[in-house]
Image 1 (cartoon, one colour):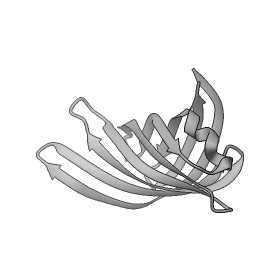
Image 2: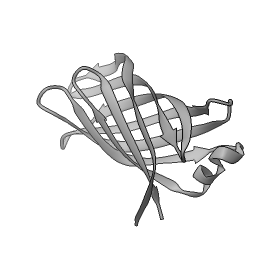
Image 3: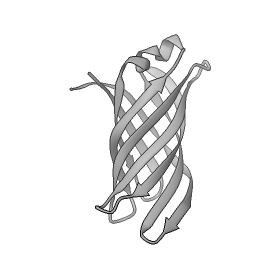
Length: 134
């Protein structure tokens, strides 16, 4: 069951490249940088996400990232999502993240699956919302 919202970030796609394109298989890599709050704490987030085109439509996305608090605490994130491309090149993602942190301010993330909803506009603006999965 979806629990409380634990974070909301906004940012931009800062890098994008095609990493493989053979026949119909397309793979795109994006680097995203964003800022916001997680568990009420101001954070910055950087992640690299690889999108693999699926035969049945849409993209399977998998990535890694790091959350940093303003006082230097960090959490490493790994996640995956299904993404659907919009007509204008925007992408809408739904998935899950898992965190690892030894920082007391972020340790709650170690015990939950983090549901994600990410919207990437055609101009590269990113809105990232996270909920605790209970």
